[in-house]
Length: 238
Image (cartoon, rainbow, N blue to C red; front, side):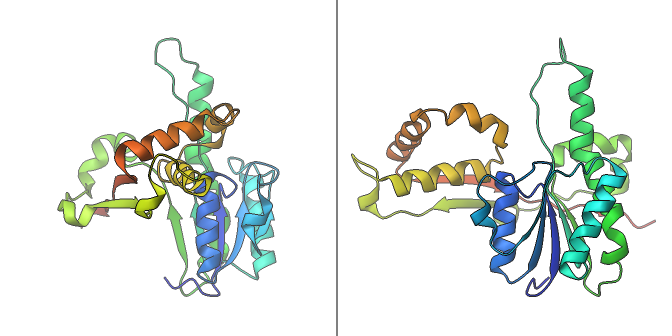
């Protein structure tokens, strides 16, 4: 899908991954509405000409309907919806709270369903309408349960499925002393690729130790890289 002049609503837009997606969409020439539960992004300047719609509870049908209607009105319609809104919580089953499970369900599933329902009246009118949901393969398989047999989740060769993210630096930038620009670039690449939510970063960035840890990694490995994996899901023919 060519994004130039396409009208795109992005949920979870004020987080680390959402901000990156908004930036890429704008760079490709899209008209963007950025939606989030937070009232405002931490760095509004990163959002350029995007329409900012904060303080939205997308897990509630009326909240989602109102927010997507506002986005469509601002952009003159919608060609695509990108659902990134979500969150994570790490707890052992023993001693965990059911409130946490309910919160994860609302954040990661209900937001996508409610936003998709609210966007459909506009997306269906678009010749190139799209809804893109970003989630985890493991969570999807667990949710499908025995119905997994109705879908094809093909294993493709590593040269097609596994891709590598590299942060390129000049040899002179990785030495006894590493500049702040390289250190910050590596740090932001790390939290973006690994999709670390903002709430976990607040305590880590309270002092400068995270920058020293980043420098230590760069010096040890001579750079920064990550492996990630893509997969496809198709329904078996009836």
